[in-house]
Image (cartoon, rainbow over all chains, first blue to last red):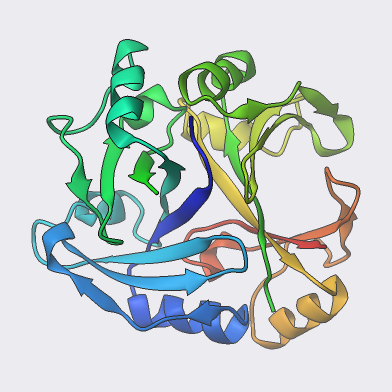
Length: 134
Length: 134
């Protein structure tokens, strides 16, 4: 069912410092910050030859990553996003197997303009899993 | 400097259960467990179209992931591995920029039979970074 690893997301307390690290210290292809008010984050995309890393920083008081950064003040890996061909079919198969889909199970439009869902980390060995319809 | 994302490693408390989840629930291409006594882990490789996920489980009392699983009993994302062309050049550039290389700075032979180094997570926004010479 799952296809490519679309991205790994890292929540960071200082977006400029993290972007500088990946650009200057690790020599990666780092894009400009993009505000995503609908998702409560500002995102910096790092383009690798085979996948992406996304640096996430809270945008607004109700950002979904505020709690994560409170628990992990230095930052940390927040989630992994796998591509699927059909997000509704994937959701239904996952629910039938007992996995918990976060929210009401209706896909939202993610940062790439495509439908996404998140799966409960307790069902996937402590890893928050995002599915994105490719 | 960094190239492809070689893999994302997830430490898991129950290797068989995690392998079953990725195989049966997520429909991924999951390999057999491989003991890596030199690294104190048993590894299951999950092959995605563009990269790999590695499930890690402690092997032996001195496993380097015992402490991680004590802090994260349900498991969690342990590290990310980027490929570099020349690990010695990468190490020297990183040290010159102030990043801390773990151990004595001498590359070890990793699970893929290639030289690897780990960078201090405090220097990379809470993310343990492995570099592997491709």
